[in-house]
Length: 556
Image (cartoon, rainbow, N blue to C red):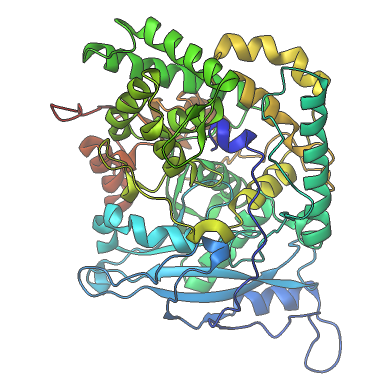
């Protein structure tokens, strides 16, 4: 799920040509109009049979395409296992499988264990919506190496993302965000600019990707996952979903409860919230996480204040001051309030970023904005879900350079398209103004941006399906839900509500008393042991089980 800045940002990526994929699959007989070989039109049942009968043509993976974020081709794993990629065909519209079809991009690493011990494939979705699973899985694979003893590790670009019929909204000639304020509280002109920008963005999305926009929602993506399951030869879908991936996993369980295998949902989205309620909960989640950071900082003699309350107040005052008078930085640019929110919200995703955030805020308060600007730029390269690449954790003394490789990624476009397809909520400026006091009470720092982000679907050319995808799954086997008490983006309370919505005996909760977004990728030994035990051996944690965070090393 997104941070305040990831939701409210008006920065849309420039248009880049899609690279033609060199990967092929044994495509179903019915495609590109789905005509039968005898000249007749395929029935829906014939088309579905052909889709399910595909045999992926696995090949060595090329470098991720610009639309996936770019970068180098994935390197072999330490034991020499090569990454393999393939392309499947799926119906563009699952309600009309004999109609137009589309590509789904896949990646996998084969199991490292004995064939007799292999359970099947473990399918990952790392969040967003909008992130490329094909580009993401290789970088995170070391975290899941123990699971590879019994599973092939598999991920995919969901429909509308990366090499799976990417949505393109960006039109640099028409969409100029340079004068757009994400929090237009200073006057009618700023609000008019934001409304116009969202309207023009929606028009550009329809112009560039109108043929695919109605079909990129979570429910259709869940049906794609069942196709992937069948094509990979698995009787059940074994699944690991993180953040938005928990919503996708819940949608799958609702559609196919009898096909759910061992499933883990980590960083759980609250399925009871409409988009405004979700944004309000996130405002409170980020505020709570920042207060935890402030308490940690105060314990270490933070120069911003003697206690957490003063540190929070000082940061709010600094953000307001930077909005009024941006601070010059050494590269010739300026540090403004939006950059401060970028840095703070991004750093709250991982506790090991906190030491750098402390240094950056102390320096900015002393009129040196370089570290905070570097941090904002580094953590701003995070796409729809807002989760920075763990391998790029910044160091206070050497904040990472920001590569231009992601300039062609369609993550923001896909985030907007999937979000607006999933939700029928279409808020107006009057709706936001009426709720602003609640958002400000929840968080004076993060609340305004999250409130105004509710306008992002205004004027969207697709009506949207409901407030949220349905997740009730009576009859499904246990699904392990992991809630993090300090999670800023998917607040802890969402796990209990997902358990309730999944149904009695389905949702099974594990609590992590920690910080950051999600739990498994925090590296916490207790969390990893519990999740590994379930996925590898089918053993659930004891009811009410709690894992405690491990403190940061001394000196940090």
